[in-house]
Picture 1 (cartoon, one colour):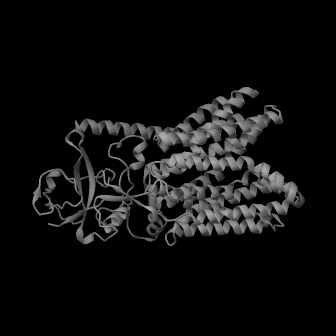
Picture 2 (cartoon, rainbow, N blue to C red):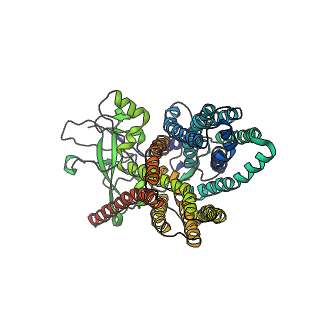
Picture 3 (cartoon, one colour):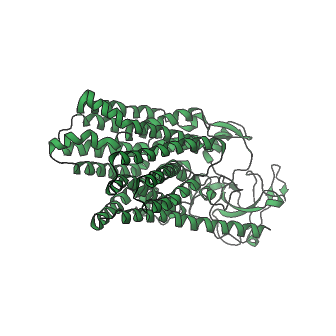
Amino acid sequence: MMSAKLVTGDSDSRGSSESSGSDNYVLVPPEGGWGYIVCVGLSVIFIAGTAHQPVFGFIYNDFLDELGVGTGAVTLVYGVFQVTLAIAGFSANIALKRLSLRQVGLIGAGIYTLASFLAIFVESTAQLIITNGLLQGLGMGLLIPVSYTSFNSYFTKKKVLYLSLCKASIGLITMVYPLFIKMTMAEYGFRGTLAIICAISAHSIFGAIVLHPVEWYMVKQPKTCEQIVLIPPTPAVKDSDFDFPLKNGNGNLKIESARSVENMFQPRLNDKRKGSQLLFVTKLGDDRRLSIPVVLIPESNCNSKFNSQDNVYVENLYKAASVHSLGHFGSIAAEPMPIIKNKEGKWQTVVEFLDLSLLKDPVYDSIIFGMALTFFADLTFFTLEPLFLDRNNLSRTEIANIIAIGGASDMVARLLLGVGGQFFAMNSRHMFFSGALFAAIFRTVFIQFTTYTPLLILTGILGALRSLVHISQPIVMAEHVPIERYPPAYGLYMLLAGGLSLSVGPMIGFIRDYTGSYVIAFNMLTVCNLCCVVPWGIEALLARRRSQREKHLQT
């Protein structure tokens, strides 16, 4: 016989709760409080780091003409920035193994501010690439996953609401930024404008400073249900191989359902396995029974992070969001991901250090691949749209109106999503899926027209749809992985997005130049959206079938 403990999710919260001496409460994120300041910090970081990027060409146009390099340098600087951003975002996980979120954020903010300061004194294209490409990309690459991780750690139910407000404020500042830069260029000149931008960039340090650890502000909440770990389906030991007489606190046997994580068990092993075993615990009432697999870890190994028999890292198992929502599309994010450990070796060390085991989860792979392609298609479409409009002989005023309508509808949609998030529960994955699907549909309709009025209306619709993608993008991943694994998860996404930008982007550009057709280029962007919609749709159907099958088995 061996005694065992039932491993539950959210171990950090459980430990804190037990140390406080209360078994009736659990520590949860504050859903506000200092989280509001974190929202302000998030907005400040992105305003300081990204608001000036759309007017980069306008700021440096005369300077580049003096150097005789033309606008090709703008593309080169932006490409270096994107590559460095992707690599730095992926590498942020390495820094977070030794430093806190706020420390990594301060390093990123410091690097970005230094880059903005050095940019004031640039005299050549090489210096511009180093400051605005390499250093600024490095700084923002560290700041983005850190700021999103901090935000997601403070909110669980109202992420859409507050992220919508953050994105709306960022978008509003970005819209008025060109007018601001035009004024400063006229008043203070090229170098003076760069000095002002440096001062604005320095505010990213403030944004990083307010990223306090959420553990400082956790609040007590009465326990409403058992905290129990759900793990993906694995070959379970047959019921006949085990007998689990449950004990109560007095050592007497209990025949009722296992409803307390303090229950002990006494298995009769029919084989020589001495590792952790799989137990199916009957949950809920008789009318809503559900067999849930949980991990039982021998007491002698409770302090071990890894059980070699079952190949699962204990410290990374976590609680599912809801037992009720199992099998539904939106709750797929609640299914935890196992961290599988193979044979020891140098490659395995690299995998563990960079947390590449995330890639062994097919749902996570589908998420980052779909999001990266959809996000790339969105940015590329709105970049090429002015050129497409110009090709159709629209006047500059008409083109400006169409672009303005797209930006305004995006802004209004973000505000409406923020208001809607206050009253309705919004599933981030549903939002992203809807945005990707309808953007593909209306983009296909868009290329069928060449006149002003329909293009104006369709751009307004597409602008509103892009808000679904931009707001839900950082939340989708946060709802699929535990918060401690969010930095590497988002870093891998940034690396993939950067790789797609460098590979698919030039390919689409080459095809457009070779064929001379924007229609073909836009159709390829629609295919990128479908690469997200189709796998996610199949996944939803499979989840629905699994849910129906489980309900049928229960009845």
